[in-house]
Length: 202
Image (tube, rainbow, N blue to C red):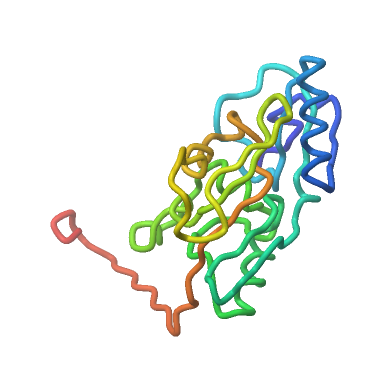
């Protein structure tokens, strides 16, 4: 797995604990003309266009709180730095799940998952990560916070920042908070493995 040193030229690493602090770091970087590289679990550094200039590494691991979890509404609002494993355990305690397959869940963050638009095989039956994001908050390149969607499944129509930022690789803004719709845990799971011996059987 590629390391931060392999993929990016980082002159400084900062780890804000609050969303307002993160916005202040980005505003300062904009004022000085410094590049900013958002860092989640650093599990997908090889994706996207290689970095060509040095900048600061903005670690989001400190933004890992559960903001709101009305389990009966089947939604959860969390900060983007939450580990996927932590999110899964929180949901499992209420008999719920985010049915998106992702590798390295003990390290990878939700914000990184959304920013890279990584999906597993269940997307063909249950949908991709973008289908579960109903609210999003992010900070643009000038340090200004913006948001889209809301905390309920049916919210006011408008420009869909949720889908715009999904897969944007952090180029349009640093995701700081997400609201997801979740699903009940299935009572049973079944994995079927097939071994076709010819292309005609596929």
